[in-house]
Image (tube, rainbow, N blue to C red; front, side, top):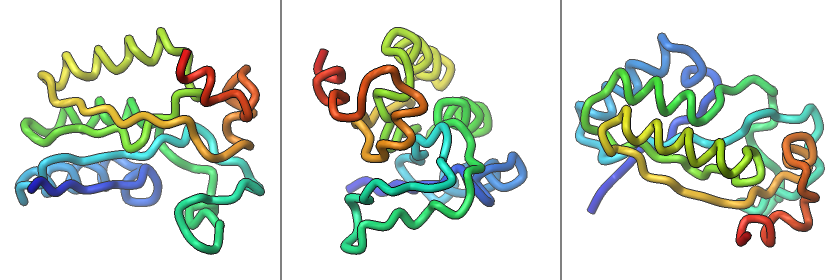
Length: 145
């Protein structure tokens, strides 16, 4: 069985001084992977129902500050040698498909094949409304395409 670590890209996970020791220590402890969430922007007000708890409230809405997922993975790839790198979960409507594919391929090459990609269509309408020309209600069909 493999165990991994999910690290938020805020607070301690939002600075080189915090992120580097977390990644290095996770690798030293034998974690199989380290994953990072995908929030390019965080609106001041989120009315969308968070689907992963009973209350429907997103627990990370306290600040809009966060690092971008793929740049964070690239940084961690540079400071580690063996731990797998996970997009947890990369939200497809956040980026153009061709650019996202190129960025992921580049990260995989530079990490020497350590990239694992988790994909999703997103749950936060406010975030997708700002980042994507595709309406929130059409994001699943666009992802299929």
